[in-house]
Length: 343
Image (cartoon, rainbow, N blue to C red):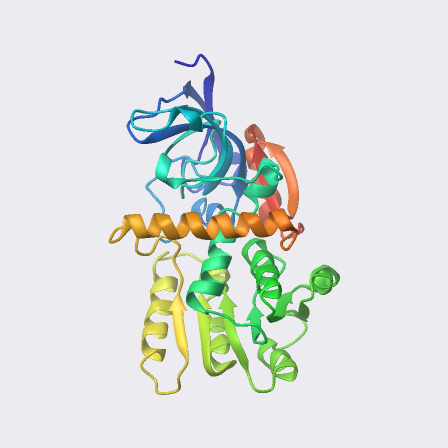
């Protein structure tokens, strides 16, 4: 038994970032098939921004500990787990619970982190990297020489997606505010200022015949524009509704509208495809397959970071107890990269 103290951040309800609470408790112990991880880095993603507003479409009831993913060292193992795993640095996708000093996860959900990466570097590409890889290679199935449009190309998922696409030999057009354009050009991305005019018209100037895939986290009207920008045989992958973050009313309705549209579009005889990507899709029906794909895809992304094909963009590192400041910073729209919380 460890004598350390558990520190966790609690989201008590719909509150401003300053309404987050710090809670102390006994460190949990791993059960059969589980690991106890000492968190070294956990991230502030768009999901937490929606959750604190009560706007994430399948968040748990308040109060709960947010934190979509984490990286840390295995402290101890439960029955049925190889004790030799203790001391290894691993990453895990948890959806909630990551904003804590110690986290228990199923051993099957932990992925080894290359020794050449720091915990913070690895953290930037856990949920963001899995999302980007699966949308790019499992949904859109991009090929070298194609052209894709990435909305929010300077954001957490968008920047990883753009770099993975470039590594695959794909031309990338990326929307972002003007202050991020130089950084995108350095990555080989052709930037489009979404504040400078009609995005569809600007994209058509760059790709008159349409693009082979669009990755859209914006939702709302943007999804319709994205579908119309596709070349014959192209693929739309929608994966969020950022434009409705501050709306009131049903948190499921924006997603349901996207699902309805993509279902309808897939019946049209134009060879195009449309998906709403959910990282958890298929887990309930095929858990072993879900886990195998997750481990494989995250391993690929971490290796790409280790090789230098993807740059781990850390916007800021703050201690776990400064979660309110970290969330406020992530929501400000003034930073590039991921805001990381550390133990």
